[in-house]
Amino acid sequence: MPLERILVVDDEQEIQQLIDYTLRKEGYRVLCVGSAEAALAEVRRNRPDLVILDLMLPGMDGLEVCRRLRREPETAELPIVILSAKGEEADIVAGLELGADDYVTKPFRPRVLVARIRAVLRRRQSGPAEEAAPMRVGDLAIDPVRHEVLVAGKPVHLTPTEFRVLYALARRPGWVLTRQQIAAAVYGEEEPEVDRAIDVQIVGLRKKLGSAAPYIQTVRGIGYRLKEPN
Image (cartoon, rainbow, N blue to C red; front, top):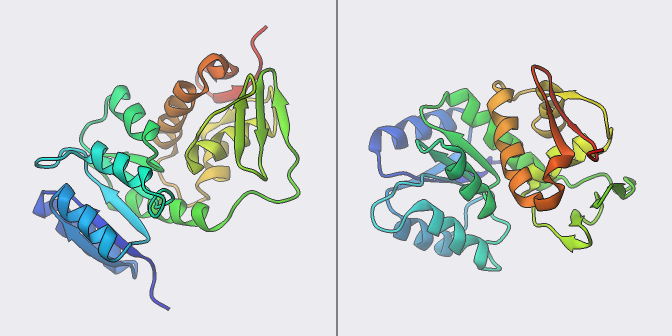
């Protein structure tokens, strides 16, 4: 059976050609467009399995595309991987807060992009184990079955990737997990550059968790842990 169909939204032809060549080698079906308007029209006409979305597009930018896709019920769960030269923390947070499943910065390594695409598609196809029990750390409550997170009783909306990072930490509260250990639970063994990938997700998580953000503690030189502050 053919692999998933991927829509590439980027106005640079060289980037389009590189991604097209890379993904077709992996067996994916690829369509490239150069504007936000063309991307939205294509999604409405023939919804892809995943969108690779640049932020700096002519006219409407990629963040607005992401916002519109997440707003419509038909595309609210459409996997989106942002691929952008904008690598500042504020840019990454903005993309993740709007619902992107992952954020890859340019310049990028083709095999890294392929690994991240595979991981996003895999996560969309498989949910958390049904036997997993709800867990709580201070004011933070996590329900793996319902895919719900509450902070002080109020719901927090996470992307599937952010949820898996939080769940990996919550399964062993107080334990320090390396980035490699977190990535193994989130991306699988094929993720080749785990440090940046995990740090990106932690940035988004802390922003969304609000008062519970300090529960995710950085252990310098090792990784992260989930622990209620003393």
